Image 1 (cartoon, rainbow, N blue to C red):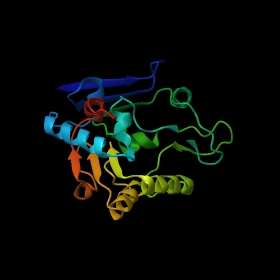
Image 2 (cartoon, rainbow, N blue to C red):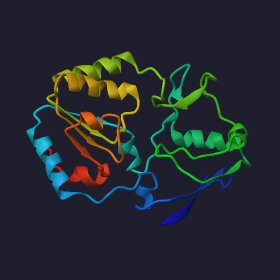
Image 3 (cartoon, helix red, strand yellow):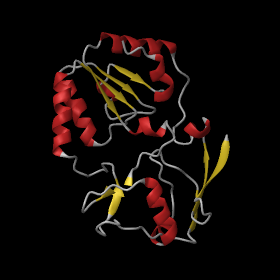
Image 4 (cartoon, rainbow, N blue to C red):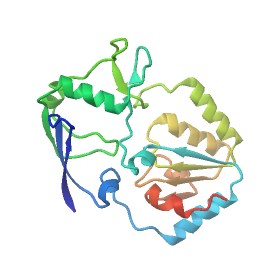
Length: 221
């Protein structure tokens, strides 16, 4: 089904018009298409979870996008202040009262595809507290992950007896490294993600299904 979606600010001035094909209502707007659930795969995942005594679950953007939430959240690089998305939207509108752009594609992370001219003409607000630059509160390709978080996850991997990855392609090394650590420990690895991941060849179980459809079928006990 081909639907057109208009994202329109409450005051009616800041607008991005998006046209894209999707198959699952509002959830499908962010989630790629996938084959129907395979009952045998559901049983295999249930068996994987049941046999695990210390299961570590690593989640990615798929958890957010299936809830209809683009997986970016707004942060000041200088002072660390966090800004609610709604507040930032009001500042976007104030700085760009007549900005309108047409887009014909939406990425899984909520980005839309715009021309360079459209991007350059858009005014981005700075931090209201210190005037510093704002960025989405996520780890981009090439970013450095907080060392304390890395150590925390590394300890959890060492304590686990199995690893389940949910909603991540594992393309970013910050997540992929923990898969390598689990592999070195000979932990069984299961991956639930629509489309290929960087670690499919390391997993004993791979499921190409939406997280929101498959996980509710699994008994965690």
